[in-house]
Every structure is written in C-alpha cells, then in structure tokens.
Amino acid sequence: MNELTAPADTGAALRLRQRVARAFARQARHYDAHAGLQRDVADALLTLLPPLTAAHRVLDLGCGTGYLARGVQGRAAAEMFALDLALPMLQQTACQPARYPPPGLVCADAEALPLATACCDLVVSSLAMQWCPRPQRLLAELARVLRPGGNALLTTLGPATLQELRSAWQRSGGLERHNRFESVERLQELAAQAGLEGTVGSRRLQRYYTDWQALMAELRGLGATTRTDSGPVGLARRDRLRAVASAFDTRRGPQGVAVTWEVITLQLRKH
Ligand SMILES: C[S@@+](CC[C@H](N)C(=O)[O-])C[C@H]1O[C@@H](n2cnc3c(N)ncnc32)[C@H](O)[C@@H]1O
Image 1: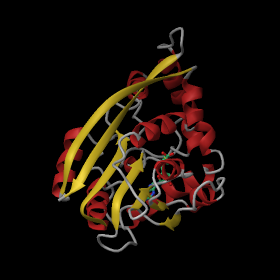
Image 2 (image 1 turned 90 degrees about the vertical axis):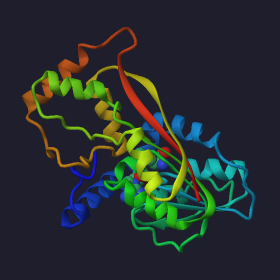
Image 3 (image 1 turned 90 degrees about the horizontal axis):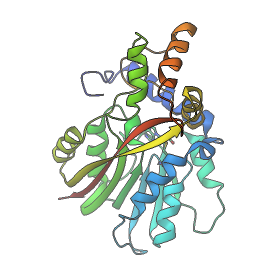
Image 4 (image 1 turned 180 degrees about the horizontal axis):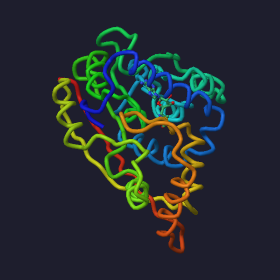
C-alpha cells in the first residue's frame, strides 16, 4: 500500500483502526496458537538487539501477546513498555507467567504515541507496522520518542508476501482480497525522511500449508483479516472463493502449498 491507496485521515481512517483493533482483540486469546511465523521472526529480531542495561528504556510497538517484550527482558534488564491498539492483546501480555517485572502497558495507536519526546533508548516492533496505514507517521512518531542516538529494530512484511494467494485471485478472475505491502526502497526513503539512518533489508521465508483453508484458518486465527487499503471489503461470493481455493490448491506439492512471506527488517538509528 502507499499514500495514494491509504484512506484519508478522516472517519475512514478511524473506522479502519477500529476494524484492525477489533479483529486482533477478538483473537487475542487464540493468537499464540497460530503465531509460528511471528515467533520465528521475533526470535531473529532478538539476535540483533544492541547491548542494554537497567538504565535503558525499551518500547515494543504492536506488542500483541508480549512475546518480543519478554524476549527483550530475557536478554536485558532494561525498563520495558509494551504498546498495542487492542486492549485484549495487552491483557494477554499482562497475564503471562511473571519471570520478569511486568512491562508498562500502553493501549494506543502506533501512529500517535502518547509518550514524551526523546523518552526511549530503543524501539522494537515485530510484524505490526504493516497494519499501520501510514508508515511515515509511525516512523515520525518513533523518531520523536527516541532519544538522539537511540535505535529502532523493526520487522514488517514486504510486497512478495502471499504472492501465491494474489496469483490464485488473479487466475480465478476476481479482484484481489489481501493487503499490499510497502517495498524496501519505500521504507528506506520514509525512514530517511523521518530522520532515521540505517539499513533496510528483506528475506523471503516459505511456509507450507495443506491447502487454502489451512492458510485462511491461520490468518483468521491471528486476527490478520482486515483489509487496510482501498480494495474491496466484505465477503466474496461463495463460488468465487471456491475458484480461488481451487486455483491455490493446484500448486500443492508433497509438502503442501508453498507460501512466500517477505520479511523486511529495519535497523535504524536516530541522528
Ligand atoms: C501480527 S500482530 C504482531 C504481534 C507481536 N508483535 C508478535 O510479533 O507476535 C500485530 C499487532 O499489532 C497491533 N496493531 C495493529 N495496528 C496497530 C496500531 N496502529 N498501533 C498499535 N498496535 C497496532 C495489533 O493489535 C496486533 O496485536
């Protein structure tokens, strides 16, 4: 998605945020059971953490059930804050076994942080940024709350994600019904505009699904079902869905249907 397809900052943007929050809120108690990819991506991000001490303050944006925040706490004694748009996600974060002091919980929009300027040493975020219709706002807010010299480590999804699903929609002659994602180049440009320097890189992961139903069950189980651009919303006709499922399933090999997830990692530093 880009600025041209993002909804204007009006009632439409507010309704979109509410739809995203509701979808994740509904699935908060079931999220972890479907979050295999999210765990792998967060674990990879944790290997990139800079050295931290108890004097550092870290913010996890779009924390979900708090896996990444706990991972940071497991590696460093830093003061931790976890922020999410969906209150039930924060409730899940709060009720995890307390091996570490519970993070400070903040229910807010990552594009409008209720935090003081220059209050954080590090911002982490895993697979939440793609749910924010204006990544430039998120990056500007992130740059604002970072102290000069502070770091940000983020992952998001790139345009090749779910390309097999897109192709199944195209082959069945229907309008696509899944989200589009920002490219490495665009994110690099937006980070620079926000006053953040560093590297943006991507890698492709392949995961196998028994069939289209299994992929849909995972996306529904995560709460990852909201359309964030201006494409069609609502249910497609039943016969259209059958055609898409069958176009998708024709790719099935011995391990199932291979599906691409392009994971983009941003390693940034505030000037
Ligand atoms: C796919 S989950 C990732 C959760 C967690 N970071 C993980 O790796 O398991 C995306 C999370 O981002 C949150 N989210 C979506 N849009 C947001 C926004 N604008 N501000 C803050 N959180 C948001 C959702 O509520 C959800 O918990």
